[in-house]
Structure formats: C-alpha cells, structure tokens
Image 1 (cartoon, rainbow, N blue to C red):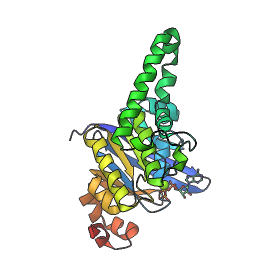
Image 2: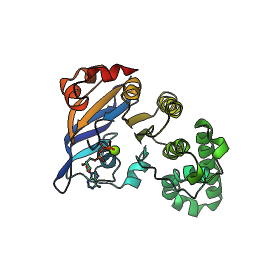
Image 3: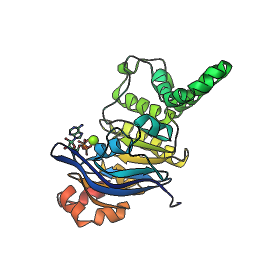
Image 4: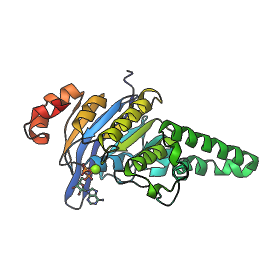
Length: 263
Ligand SMILES: Nc1ncnc2c1ncn2[C@@H]1O[C@H](COP(=O)(O)OP(=O)(O)OP(=O)(O)O)[C@@H](O)[C@H]1O
Ligand SMILES: [Mg+2]
C-alpha cells in the first residue's frame, strides 16, 4: 500500500463547556487504507468525525485533507473537496424515496455547477441524467433496487443504513467517513455491510474511516486504527499493535485481552 497521507489531525482540541471531547489528538490516515476509530461510549469518536468534516470547529489544532488545511471551511466545501460521511443517527429524509435521498448526495456538485448550467441550460439536463446514472449505479451496488421508489421512512432499519451509505457514496470523492454503519443490525445485515465497505475500499479505491464498536469487525477490516478514551488518544497502529497495548487492554477492554479473539 502506498504511504501517501490523505488525512491528518494535528493537536485537535475540542471542548464543550468544561467537557473535553477531544484532547490534543494527532493522527494520520494514509491513502487507500481502512482506518478505524474505536473507544468506549463518549470517547470522542463522533466528535472527531464532526471536526474532520467541518461540522464542529476545534478550539485548537487543525485538520489537513490532501495537504490542505480545511479546519476553518464549511462542511459543504469540505464535501466538495472529496470527503463524504454518514451519521451515527440516520440523517435521511424519511418522506422521500430511496432514489431521491441518494440523489441528494449529488447536491454539492449540482450547487457548485449551477453558474455553468445557467450559461448553457442544455447542459443542465445532461448533468441531471449523469447524476441519476451515478445514483442508479449505487442502488445496484447496494442491492436495494426493489426499494428505489419507496419512501425511506417505511423501510427496515438495515436498509435505511444502506441508503445513508448510498448517499455518502453519491457524493463521490476520495474518502468516506462511516459512523457506526453496522449499529443495530443483525448478523447477516452486518456481514453485507462489511462486504460493501471492503468493496468500496478495494474496488472503488476509496479511503475509509470507520467508527465501529464490534471488535471482530474492526480487527478484520482495518489496516490501522486509533483508540480514544475520554477524549484522549491511547494509541494508533495496526490491529496487532493495538491489541498488545497495555493501556488498551486495561482501559478499553477492562483487562480482557481475549475479547479480540472472540471470532
Ligand atoms: N454537541 C455537543 N454538545 C455538548 N457535548 C457534546 C456534544 N457532542 C459531543 N459532546 C460530548 O463529547 C463527548 C464525546 O462524545 P462523542 O459523541 O464524540 O462520543 P462517541 O465516542 O461518539 O460515543 P458513542 O460511542 O456513544 O457514539 C461526550 O462527553 C459528549 O457528551
Ligand atoms: Mg458516536
């Protein structure tokens, strides 16, 4: 694997009132890898996603994406630069169909091309067709063709999680952040999701940053990972390195090293 850096956090510090959600966190994600962030509830994982994707602005530190400092720019602009994400609590439009929700993932492109489209309105229709093609392709990939015209709110939770992934993929880009994509799923649904994540990484050549609680999944899927606990970074490294870290065994697993060996 190439060792080109794609995403970097440097001394990221974020607090809410007196609570330090993130304390001086530094990490590196390399191009092409699956990088996971793990840690107990309240460790700061989602907060880190929110900082990376521009939804939260840290009090100190910075985020570099493809070498550019993106700390102070808007989530929309960051998305346009090639970063997409899903949310821990689904952020779908329940009354809209699967296809419409996935098409929404294209909105940053539509918005950013609007001037060009005004000057040549014949082109606008072509662009619309192109956006639709991208969405349909993603629907096929995620095996949700049967639901494409159904309002999202009526669908099983596992399917809604796929739609959310679909919307993130529709944005395109080089990196996708997935906040607990398998949470609340049964084993079969979780295995399907794991397969999609592997394909996105291997075939679609996207870097994946993953938050996931299931240790078996994390250790199987990740090239490297970072462990957080109470807003502090405990360690960063390969699954083998991380599993051996005494503080990880102690603080995160309560001394139970065998948890990793469960699968
Ligand atoms: N918008 C916010 N306002 C106030 N406090 C917040 C906010 N977002 C996060 N926090 C606090 O920051 C800390 C980290 O929360 P965060 O959601 O990042 O944890 P997490 O690791 O994603 O946990 P979980 O595994 O439960 O999703 C918690 O103490 C949380 O209460
Ligand atoms: Mg979270």
